Amino acid sequence: MQEKKKSRPSPLSRNPHVRRDENEIRKIIAEIESGNIGIRSACFKYGLNRNTLKLWMTKLSIRTLSDNKKNIITSSMADEHKEQDLNCQIKQLKKSLEYAKLKIIGLETMIKVAEEDLNIKIRKKGGTKQSKE
Figure 1 (cartoon, rainbow, N blue to C red):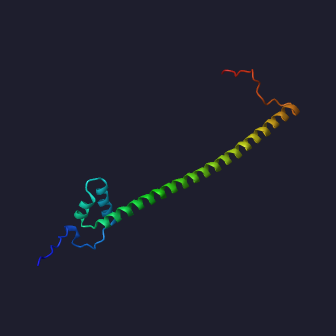
Figure 2 (cartoon, rainbow, N blue to C red):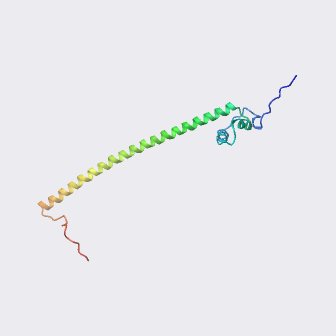
Figure 3 (cartoon, one colour):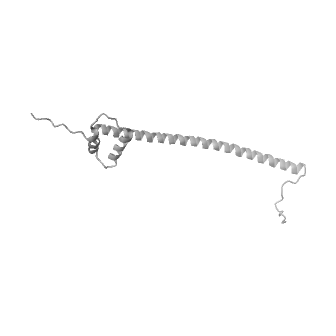
């Protein structure tokens, strides 16, 4: 009878049930995505099943997409918050402007009353020049 040849495990797959940490998985996938090594070569080199490697690649791409989506949502929320702050600042500035206009009208009225009723000269005449000392 012929004996079936047992395939020799690669050096890293001698313990096939070892969990790999996130950094090692990312390193393997980055090596594949950069084009330095193919999927089959990576499977042989690291002692992985092809389906496991493809699953890791899918999970990593989903995580990357969800992280990008979170960043987009966070930035849009930050933009909305910034817009609300700017609208609030605009309202405050409009109130300040209205108050300043009312104050100017009040002061001009006081000057007018003082000049007309009390005969006090407050406004400077336009044609006078300052003396040089």
